[in-house]
Image 1 (cartoon, one colour):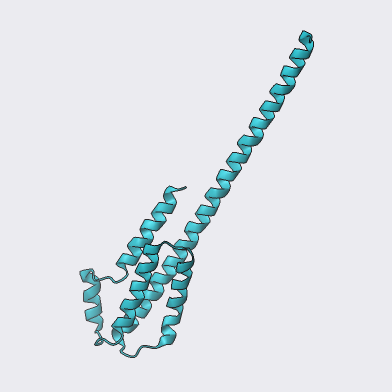
Image 2 (image 1 turned 180 degrees about the horizontal axis):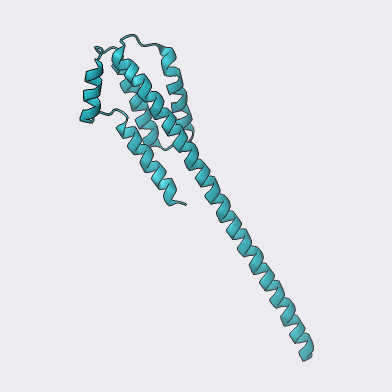
Amino acid sequence: MNSGMIAASAAIFGSIVGALGSVVGTWITQRHQDIRDLLAKTIVRRESLYSDFIAESARVLVDAMVQNNSDAQKLIPLYALLSRIRLSSSTPVLETGEAVIRIIVATYPKPNLTPEQIESRAVSGDDPLRQFSDACRKELDSLQRQL
């Protein structure tokens, strides 16, 4: 082989390696970006789901504190949200969500509270949703760290 053939072969192989490196680099970057986008969407969906569960739980819990007659219709949205949580969330989040519903159901037969008593409980830190909120925050923080 003459020196011209060696130089031409080196140039061709150098171009192939350079192009291959560029393609692989682009593929890796795109794949990483796709994973980040999917994770970001997951975080937004879960934040929304947890927020809806907290709002509905608070509403039904206050209803349970001021009324003794439990209406199963009022619990349906809460159970639906819990089932959606069951689809995607960790075991600690699910278990604390189930505990919130048990607290709500157990609150209905108890004596009714006055608005002052409800306010007093809130001020004293008696928050049945606290453990659920903490479990959600831990899970969302864990997902955020993966970004």
